[in-house]
Amino acid sequence: MPERRVVITGIGPITAFGVGIDPLWEGLCAGHTAITRSDRFVPPFLSPFVAELPAETFRVRDVVPKSYRKNTKVMCRDVELAVGAAAAAIADAGLVTKGIDASVEPTIAPDRFGCHIGAGLISADVDELTAALVTSRNGSGTFDLAHWGQQGMQNLTPLWLLKYLPNMLACHVTIVHDCQGPSNTITCCEASSALSLGESVRVIDRGAADACLTGGAECKLNAMAYMRQQLAGRIAPAHDDDDPAAVARPFDVSAAGTVLGEGGGILVLEALDTATARDATPYAEVTGFATTQSFCPDTVGLAIDPDDESLGDALSLAIEQAGLTPDAIDAVVPFGSGIPGVDRAEAVALGRVFGERTAAIPIVTTVPNVGNCGAGNGAVGLSVAARCVRDQTLPARLASGDAGTLDAGTAETRPASLAHVLVMTNSQGGQNAAVVLSRLDA
Image: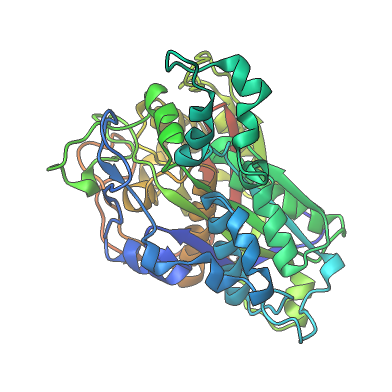
């Protein structure tokens, strides 16, 4: 366990349900889905369904200081989501920063406030990119690569690159809230958020910061990003008249893939002594973290070997670091994507770690409700796990079919005794991460 205890004092998920933990938690507990028919995509995509954050529920200009609004012009969607999530997390934690009120002394000294945000490989806006590409057509109307390299590329907007660099999420968040402590960006697909949390824990543990913003965000509702997932065989086929809530079916033996979403979340991590000094009420304590790497025999889809043992190793190491045994874990929040090979790898890992007890451990899923948010997916799971621990409640679960030996079928919201919750994720590329969140008095 870390020598300096680290707790979660604020959570700011941003999903298709809205901004902040309350709309997400209410949607999950009510058994609703935010997955709907997409207005952004047309065939040849396999499915009309995505999980989109409605435009009327979020404008990034509303969550940054007036003096910073002109900078929103160079924010891609992923950056907007991270900035919105950070504002929600800071408000939830009861903190004051430069971005909240520059006239008030910040709650955390800027040089003691770090930031670690996971990001995806951001795809450029298609219209913006093709407006420049079209200028490099030759006389026959085909694309001229030589002209593009010599001249056509100059027709991109001057600040084009600044919109799409993955580190721009943390860049804007740290500028807005004046986080001058250690900062980093991790781009490891769906594992990015949990890996960022591990980075923040270590920074606080070694005394380099007293608090950190951590998590991740991604928008895969982009033609190029979506097509990459489709070509990798990860998208569940669906038709317009299908039930959106039943398209992504985590751990269902007949599941065919996932549904993409946009979102993620930022969490406020603090040293327990710092949180106590300001009378904060933590959601949970981060007691264990571990990461491993799985082998990916498929070099196209970067899918892990379903029988690889590395994911189970990450779970065991995180539980061991928390000073616990597998019997102490009361619930698990997995990736739960509905992608057959990924679900199988998670089920195998759980079976290796928990043995005969596996079927008795309740599973909490989010993808059927808010879609697979890529690099932000782990932050959604961590936010939900923290709320589960605080409220001692398991939210409802959407599913259908046969979940095998796992407790992952359809369920209503129910009270539960939750001392320790395990959050786990693997990723497209083989990175694995596991986090143990514990009730503070456990």
